[in-house]
Length: 283
View 1 (spheres, rainbow, N blue to C red):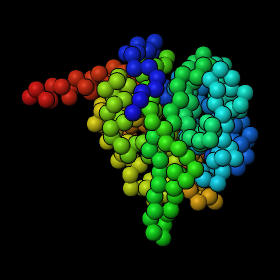
View 2 (cartoon, rainbow, N blue to C red; view 1 turned 135 degrees about the vertical axis):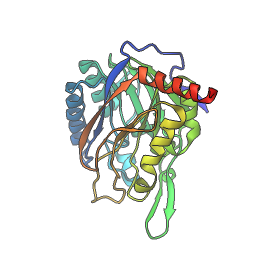
View 3 (tube, rainbow, N blue to C red; view 1 turned 120 degrees about the vertical axis):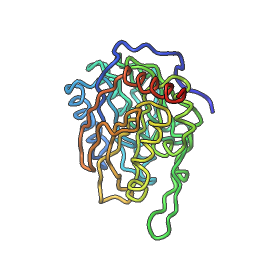
View 4 (cartoon, helix red, strand yellow; view 1 turned 180 degrees about the vertical axis):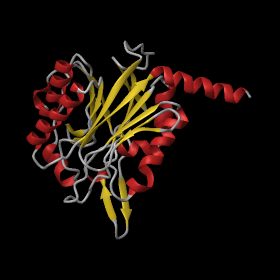
């Protein structure tokens, strides 16, 4: 697996800052989704957030049939082909915030990817993460879904150096694989952002426990952002966007409706947790 983004040790200007998760309702109107996402992003910035997350497939209903129709080409030097990323660049620059822009369907040649773009507070594209672990599932009588029928898997680990520090990036099913989180932690990430649309079968079983496991095992923050639940579509999201601390404790969460979730990220607290762990190993 190749690594995408900076792996150098980051020295963020702020040792403590506010994170916001925008759990938004996604419609079949892309322009309306972009407009509404901007609204929530600006509200999060107005609330003092320096790092803001959007969910997986925030500009597009979660459907194999729609990914191609909603797909955009993403050129870091010219975002005119991506109205979704163009909006993210504008908001990050105007509000001077770091945006982990959920994921959108990206068209690259003959391939489609579920792609997360990270924008710095200057509005520049800092990194892109293409979902590595696609979600193929067949639960007889309950759920059949194959992302691989339309999407191509990415093959890069993404760690990005930002104004708020080193961030690891994962998309939905990536959270099931501890190796990705371990590699992010080994390369200096103190926060891993997972953009996810866990559905109604796997959500109650795995959503919370996986977040706690990734945070506790690696002694870092885990932030997850889901779409709000829409029961009119086949792949209804579980919701429950959450921030988990390095002891595996839930710091902030919500239900399944639209919401903006705030929490504090404190690098001094991470150091304290890791110091305590070192002491316990010595006893």
